[in-house]
Length: 342
Length: 174
Image (cartoon, rainbow over all chains, first blue to last red; front, side):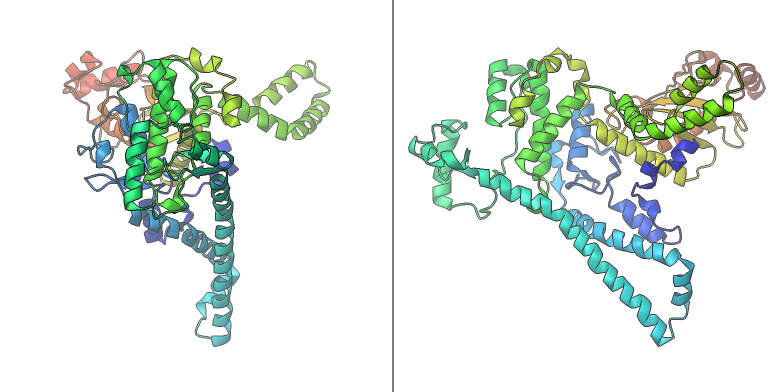
């Protein structure tokens, strides 16, 4: 028990209790912008008809896993087609994240007795100038760290769009180097079916290019398939068209397509600036597949890392124990048991 | 590039059965949610319930304690329960059983299995260890005698003296 209360991993968890009990409204606010399924801040929040909101991926996962057709909170009937992106909630979350960091920081400073004292006599002009200046300085540092943490993601996105470009005719993603050959060959290298190409190309020639120039990925959702009616070959073709692996037996192919549809469609529920790149989603899918097929290997991994990290410490303790226990017989055994327990 | 390298290892992929196709979530997110729940449990001091992971390295198996609510027949008795989370938690319910023998209409006295709808078909991903423990605590005082797992207990529920005698006969203090 004591191990867990002292666990630094646990201490680092951000949750509503980061705010002091007297700031109950802040705790409530922090709890309100969290998904009740994953208890993290909403990531691509969607709302159901009953008004309850969840991360898009969480509720899609719930509906897919349990084939439940009701809201997890109130059990009102709900379908995947009912999901509506809640952009207001998304904006609130992205504003709240830096705001809470700022408030928590202030609250911690407030805990220091020196500052508390200074707060009390704010009627005194010179002393009130002090604390009011400090927060504003803090706000810029908070903002700066927030910005810099966003930067790599954006950089990644632009890099991704450099290597692949959307063909102006068929909208397929083609490597930059191959685009001329692709167009010259009448979009032959495209993986999309000719039928949808033509209609799409016709429409885009009428409607003009899409307004979002930098968005290389189409906004088309991946539809659910009637997997039982598809042959393995057809499934592979579908996966190939999506740029996914085509290895494995039927059940693996189906699971992969389902998971991809979920990841992809949930990603589309986010506003464009919060969306992940297709490459990132592919990596997520691969990670999911590898974890799915290596069940519960986590514990030894954690332990060995822990053992490695503290090996010198353990050695030192073992040595110390040896010295202490020297007069006793059979000390070796005792020591071995001890180190295993750790 | 990554696509190519990972395609070199299809053997382990194809060997798996459909059975675990239900685990649609990454283990990382399960760990995260469980850590969050642990935090919530420790911060919210609900009287008579507590739960902790069995060991330091493994978040997937917990030990919980439930104390019978006041003014119920279970008042003052403490029960140990074990909670095991599957890789698809919270989309699937954890498996829960009483470790301390519990004489109760909805609990199997020998295996400790519990008959409670929210742990079976009525499970929802928004439930947590905290809500489960609270539900179990209230189940102790208010059994569902319509679908008993222990018919004998259900039969004598309405005669508290007999029930208490049976209860104490099976009970083992922690």
